[in-house]
Amino acid sequence: MPQGQDMGAMLSSFLPLIIMIVVFYFLIILPQKKKDKKFKEMLANMQKGDAIVTIGGIEGRVSQIKDTTVTVEVGSDNTKLVLQKWAIKSVEQKEKA
Image 1 (cartoon, rainbow, N blue to C red):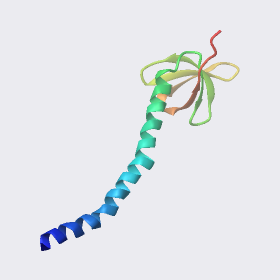
Image 2 (image 1 turned 60 degrees about the vertical axis):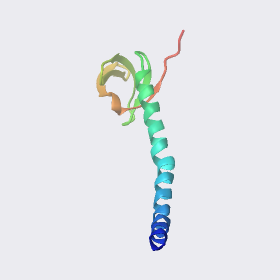
Image 3 (image 1 turned 90 degrees about the horizontal axis):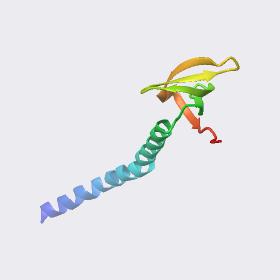
Protein backbone atom coordinates (compact mmCIF):
# COMPACT_ATOMS: atom_id res chain seq x y z
CA MET A 1 0.00 0.00 0.00
CA PRO A 2 2.82 2.48 -0.38
CA GLN A 3 1.24 3.90 -3.53
CA GLY A 4 -2.02 4.56 -1.69
CA GLN A 5 -0.16 6.50 0.96
CA ASP A 6 1.73 8.45 -1.70
CA MET A 7 -1.54 9.32 -3.42
CA GLY A 8 -3.06 10.49 -0.13
CA ALA A 9 -0.01 12.59 0.68
CA MET A 10 -0.05 14.15 -2.77
CA LEU A 11 -3.77 14.94 -2.50
CA SER A 12 -3.34 16.48 0.95
CA SER A 13 -0.52 18.68 -0.34
CA PHE A 14 -2.62 19.96 -3.28
CA LEU A 15 -5.80 20.43 -1.25
CA PRO A 16 -4.84 23.90 0.12
CA LEU A 17 -3.98 25.05 -3.42
CA ILE A 18 -7.34 23.85 -4.74
CA ILE A 19 -9.17 25.56 -1.87
CA MET A 20 -7.31 28.83 -2.57
CA ILE A 21 -8.29 28.71 -6.25
CA VAL A 22 -11.95 28.16 -5.35
CA VAL A 23 -11.88 31.03 -2.82
CA PHE A 24 -10.24 33.39 -5.35
CA TYR A 25 -12.90 32.47 -7.89
CA PHE A 26 -15.77 33.33 -5.55
CA LEU A 27 -14.17 36.43 -4.03
CA ILE A 28 -12.53 38.02 -7.07
CA ILE A 29 -13.50 36.56 -10.44
CA LEU A 30 -17.25 36.07 -9.94
CA PRO A 31 -17.93 39.61 -8.60
CA GLN A 32 -15.88 41.11 -11.46
CA LYS A 33 -17.96 39.19 -14.00
CA LYS A 34 -21.16 40.53 -12.40
CA LYS A 35 -19.77 44.08 -12.47
CA ASP A 36 -18.82 43.75 -16.16
CA LYS A 37 -22.28 42.39 -17.02
CA LYS A 38 -23.96 45.31 -15.20
CA PHE A 39 -21.70 47.81 -17.02
CA LYS A 40 -22.53 46.32 -20.45
CA GLU A 41 -26.23 46.40 -19.56
CA MET A 42 -25.94 50.08 -18.58
CA LEU A 43 -24.32 50.94 -21.93
CA ALA A 44 -26.88 48.91 -23.87
CA ASN A 45 -29.78 50.75 -22.16
CA MET A 46 -28.28 54.21 -22.76
CA GLN A 47 -30.55 56.50 -24.81
CA LYS A 48 -30.42 59.93 -26.38
CA GLY A 49 -30.96 62.60 -23.70
CA ASP A 50 -29.48 60.58 -20.81
CA ALA A 51 -27.03 62.34 -18.50
CA ILE A 52 -23.61 60.68 -18.33
CA VAL A 53 -20.35 61.05 -16.44
CA THR A 54 -17.09 59.92 -18.02
CA ILE A 55 -14.16 58.30 -16.26
CA GLY A 56 -12.41 61.66 -16.60
CA GLY A 57 -15.22 63.46 -14.75
CA ILE A 58 -16.87 65.16 -17.74
CA GLU A 59 -20.64 65.50 -17.37
CA GLY A 60 -22.96 65.86 -20.33
CA ARG A 61 -26.05 64.72 -22.21
CA VAL A 62 -26.08 62.04 -24.89
CA SER A 63 -26.98 63.46 -28.31
CA GLN A 64 -26.07 60.53 -30.57
CA ILE A 65 -25.18 56.86 -30.10
CA LYS A 66 -23.24 54.69 -32.54
CA ASP A 67 -21.76 51.20 -32.23
CA THR A 68 -18.65 52.08 -30.21
CA THR A 69 -18.93 55.87 -29.81
CA VAL A 70 -21.27 58.35 -28.16
CA THR A 71 -21.63 62.05 -28.98
CA VAL A 72 -22.13 64.09 -25.82
CA GLU A 73 -23.14 67.74 -25.40
CA VAL A 74 -21.29 69.47 -22.55
CA GLY A 75 -21.26 72.97 -21.10
CA SER A 76 -23.64 75.88 -21.50
CA ASP A 77 -22.80 76.28 -25.20
CA ASN A 78 -23.52 72.57 -25.89
CA THR A 79 -20.06 71.71 -27.16
CA LYS A 80 -20.14 68.27 -28.74
CA LEU A 81 -17.59 65.62 -27.77
CA VAL A 82 -17.25 62.19 -29.34
CA LEU A 83 -16.36 59.58 -26.72
CA GLN A 84 -15.72 55.86 -26.73
CA LYS A 85 -18.42 53.91 -24.89
CA TRP A 86 -15.87 52.32 -22.57
CA ALA A 87 -14.99 55.81 -21.26
CA ILE A 88 -18.45 56.26 -19.72
CA LYS A 89 -18.51 55.72 -15.96
CA SER A 90 -22.21 56.15 -15.21
CA VAL A 91 -25.50 56.85 -16.96
CA GLU A 92 -28.48 58.58 -15.38
CA GLN A 93 -31.65 57.81 -17.30
CA LYS A 94 -33.67 60.84 -18.41
CA GLU A 95 -36.96 61.33 -16.64
CA LYS A 96 -39.99 60.37 -18.70
CA ALA A 97 -42.56 63.14 -18.91
